[in-house]
Length: 105
Image (cartoon, rainbow, N blue to C red; front, side, top):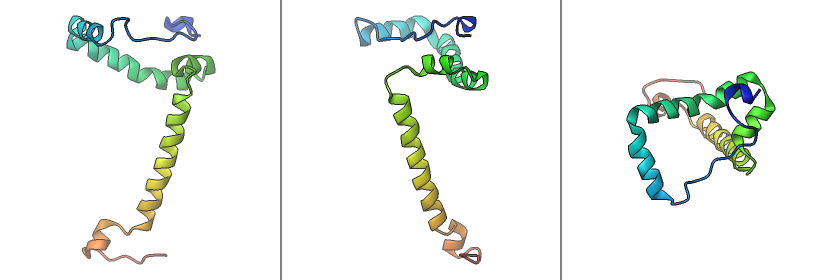
């Protein structure tokens, strides 16, 4: 399945050998239009891989460093914490007195 999308399985990308200067040169060479296209493709790829459901495609995209798993776990914890804070506090209109509500119902 990965070959159909032009990606080699387990392919990783690394920073250019000469570092930030190479990135600046690439930035100037690509221009705004190509960066928009690249960002659009990069932004859509995870969703496409998830819809396909091919675990090898998803694993190749995420890589093997464990950072993706940690990022998802951190997001889950943060989301749960925010949800608890949201449900613990009355809505702003109620807290400010602009609306009435029966709390705890």
